[in-house]
Each structure stands twice: as C-alpha cells, then as structure tokens.
Image (cartoon, rainbow, N blue to C red; front, side):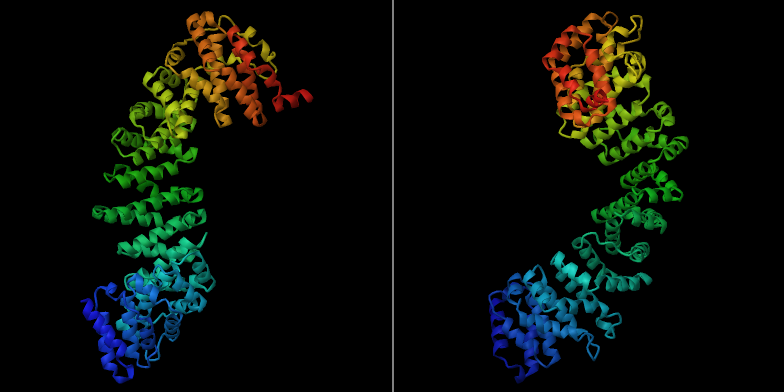
Length: 638
C-alpha cells in the first residue's frame, strides 16, 4: 500500500493542473480514499497542495481540500500543513461563503481541512488569529438558511467541528470570540433550534458544544435569562440523550448562581426533570444512561440549594414528588428525594411540617434499611444530613427521639467512612441538645464512648475528630449542667475565687452516667486536649465540660466517691490540664469572648478545689496568665 501511495504522490507532483483537470481530480480522489493517513507522513505535500487550493477549477480545489482534510488526520502532516499561505487561502475561500451558486461542497471540505489542521495545534490557531481569521470563522455562524439542502446538515456539522477545534485553544481565543459577538450569534442559532427541537436536532448538537467550550474558558460566563430558559425548553422537548446531556451540563454551570436557580425553578425545570426521569427510569440500564440520570438528579438538588428557589419550590408539586421518591427502588431517585428533602428542611417551619406529616418517619424507615456497613454511603450521608436538620427545632426533638432516631443510627458506629461518620456525630449532637434523659443514656453507652475516643485520636478527617470531641462535651453538658449550674457563679454573685466554698454540701444527684463515661480510657484526655482546639466554640465547650467534671468530682469528693475524685485528679495532671490551659490563654486570649473568659475563670477556680491541682496549675503560672487576658485587663482599667 505504501508503494501505491508513493506512486500516487509522485504522479500528482508531476501532473500539471492545466494539463487535464480530470486526471488531477482522479488522483486526488484516490489519495483521499486512503484509509491510513499515516502513510503520507514521510512526504512533503504542503507546497504541492497549496498550488491546488489556488486552482481556478472549483472541483480541483474541492478535491484538494478533501485530500488535505484526510491527510491532516495525522499529527505529522498537521504540523507540515501549518503554513501561513495555506491557512490564508482557506480563510479567503470561507470569506466568500455562501458562494454565488449556493453550493456548500467546497466550504464543507475547507472546514474539514482547516478544522483538522487546528486540532491540538496552537501554531495553526495562532496563525488564524494573526490573519484575523477568527472573525471569518465566526461569520459562518451567521449563515441561517442554506440553499444547498443536500449538504446543509454536513455543513452545520463541520462548521461546529472547525469552531470547536479552534476555540479549544484556550482562554485568549475564547475571550477574543466573545469580543467578536459569538454569544449573540450562538443565541440566535439556539433560539431557532428551541423553536422546533426535533427538526433542528443536528443544529443544536453541533452548536451547544461551542457554548460548553466558552463556559470552560471564559471565567464567570453568565448566560442571558432567555438562553437559560431556551436550554430548559430544549431539555424538556428532546429525546436525544446527547442533547439532554449538553443541556444539563450547561444548566449545571449556570445554576451555580442563585439568580439562575430561581429562574429555572420558576420555569418548572425541576418538574420537567422529574417527569423525564419518571418516564425513562426503567431504561437507565447502561452506564451512559445512568450517568445522565445522575446528572439530572444532581441539577434538581443544586437548584434546591438556593434559598429563594427552595422556598419557591416548597409551594409546588416538587415537594410531593420528592417525598414520593422515598418509596423508589432506584437508588439514585431515592437519594435525590432524600437530598431534596434535606434542602427543604433548612427552616424550622419546614422541619416541623415534615415531622407533623410523618415525612420524618419515612426517612427513618429508609435509614433503618440502609444503616449497614455495606449500604450506599451517599444515601447514608444524605439521610443523616436531612435528619440532622429535622432534629434542630426544639419542638421536633422529642418526636424524633420517640420515633427511634437514636436506635436507628447507633448501629452506624460500625461504619468508618468519614463523611458518614461526620454526619452521624453531628446528628447525635443536635439530638441531645437540651435532652437530659437521652444524654444520660448515651454517656453510659460504652460502645459509643469508646468509638468517640478512638475517632478523637485517630481520624485523618479533621471534621470527625472535632465532632467526636464536641459530642462528648455536649453529652456531659446536657446530662449534668442543670444539676450543677447552682455551683457556677453568675453576674452579681460572689467572686469566682469563693466558688468551692459556696457549693452546698447537701446537693446530691445520680452520678452513674458520668462515672461510667469516665470509666472509659481516654475520656478525660479528650476533654483536656479539646482546650487547645482550633475553634473558640470547641474551647468553650471543653471548659464547660471540665467545669462540670470538677463540680461533680472535685468539689464534693465525699459524695462522688474518693476513688473517682482521685482518679480524675490524677488524669488531669497526667494529661497536663495546666499546660493546655496555658496554651489556650497564650494562643487565644486576644480573641476570647466574655463568656469564654468567665468559663475559663470558673474552670480554673473549680480545679483549685484539689490541692494537687493547685500545685499543678501553679507550675504553669495560670494565675499570672489569667491576668494577661486583654478583656480582663480592660475591665480592670475601667
């Protein structure tokens, strides 16, 4: 075959165009029919074909362009044909489109040739830019009616391919195209396509990729509202999965804006997607179809992340549709329903409504079926996120607890996927807020506490570490704060230094839960280490927890039990509570709020109930460090 190619090339080079156009065109036809373009790599053909592209015979020029299009499928020849004269000749020809006779055969071949030369070829793109050829290429988009009906579809295809290969050259070319009004031209074409999607399917399939390229290369490219609406309408009308995917991807990017979220919500896009998914869900058997389905589902959820769009959609049929998906056997539809409801549950009124309407119970039923190690992580994460939101309003807490939330999620402690663990701990923390009875029960749950201690030390996921520590602190606080708050000085009370002296000796309560909590190795260490957490809120929570431990065990050792009191003292010293308090003051004193400073003073003075801890705190100069806190210095100055 290589020998035949060599002979054809030799004949072409020695044949005069004027000697017989039919012979030339026959040779060109044979060359363009070659199936392997790499067979031409060793030949220098650019100069020969340059002469042919300038021939007066249109048929010769057409066949020459066709040959170049085939030959430049090879990377080697793409580089060889990257010549200013050849590109200039092609651009000059395209400048004349549409031709006087209306034929699109020559423009089609030139678009193919120039498009192939531009493919992954910045040198060729730069030449087009230097020759101001980008304006010529974009003018092709103005061709709305094509007389050559037989070749219309092919021209639309190669026009799109040429512009795509050119614009893929990067940000500079895309911005220049924007300056030349490419968006206005594309919008006009898309408007035509949207008027009858079935008829103009090819037009849209070869135009929307240009929008995608511009979106990727032009920062913060915001479409006009009318264009977003047209994309929404095309999605609703099309039965072509490729076209649907393009629309979804473009709308995904645009819907990052809350304004667009609301626009699409009001246009009914979410309901459109719901109807399409219900219609085609049984056909999503291939990986491509499943990916498209997920993309559509994700767009519903994305639109619901906007506050205004969420509130608007709450009043539409979409809310019921998403509740209905909780009964779906399709994992993607089920997960989308849960994610959607989690987004609806961003206000107390919505959360209370979901509990009243038993939507919460349906979510718990789904979780009960999917709370194992082998179940879908994304669904678990979505369920925990939604339930966490539902349990935040105080009126909901008791109902959610009574419905079995805690019993349903505790088995998930065996799951060690960080995103799920993070949501699991956050959900439990929100649930125990103000729930003394539940907090007392969970403090005695050895499996839970051991796992929290483990995660607080070993998780590579900082969110899990933080939530583990916070949940332990919250359990202590909500189980015992109401029992010991008499011991914490309030505004107008006696000085904090006298705190230990004013605690009534007769005060008593059940310490079993806290004792069982402390019996787990690492619990005291966890609360001490939390003093130097990155966030002030966690530092404050640690101080409150240590205040409670000190009141319960150090201030009243005769009631708490001498052994437990001694063990707490020993562990506080072992894990260097003094050093941690010193670090806390040194690093965070400038940003401390009045509440944190008061809790810090309370904590220090409660620790001083123990002589052993008095000496320990003195070793770390805590009294002097307290005096250095700016907010206290200001009070003294006043």
